[in-house]
Image 1 (cartoon, rainbow, N blue to C red):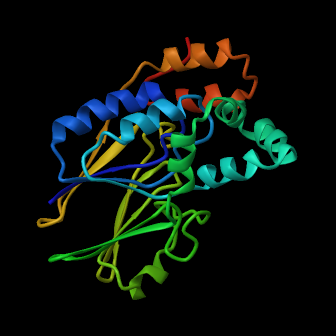
Image 2: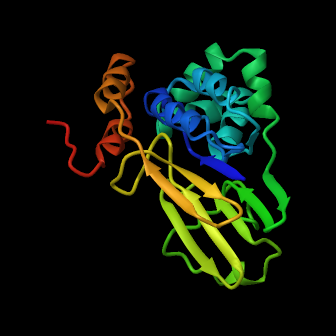
Length: 236
């Protein structure tokens, strides 16, 4: 079995379209989305539509997905999130359809799959705090040595990771929409029978995203700054 793993798209349709094309060509047996379709950028609806065409898709919730749902019901929270993260939530609130809202609302907190090669689990954050906890590539992983999973897929940090503690392997495919480790957006391919992992980087038109941010008068400087943290790229 070959699993395509993606996480933290954050409404970046420019990067996700490129990743989607490659994922389709991979002919995976299933796909696992580790959360955060929402937040930062503006094309969550288009991203969801693409996600839903991936064969045998399993998806879980991320922290920004839950933030968006809370902001739908609380104008004060919406203003706070807009100040912190830009206009993404406001735009989505105005344009979301019942179909796309249901997708976000129905996202579970975690994923589990029993295979002949062991038990696989997926969380946006961690097994102990599925939505919020950060597990970085340099975090202490001692707690993972006593959990009943053979492979754990994580998102949330926007940084690829592949580490093993005891019998448990911890894998993060990185971010498909806003990488923070100096590389292009990424996704993972995991071969269940052999344990082979491939983290694949995918270039995209960063300038097109920057132009959209500017065109929307989104004055959160981080939105542009972070997309240029790519090796060999600059705004000039």
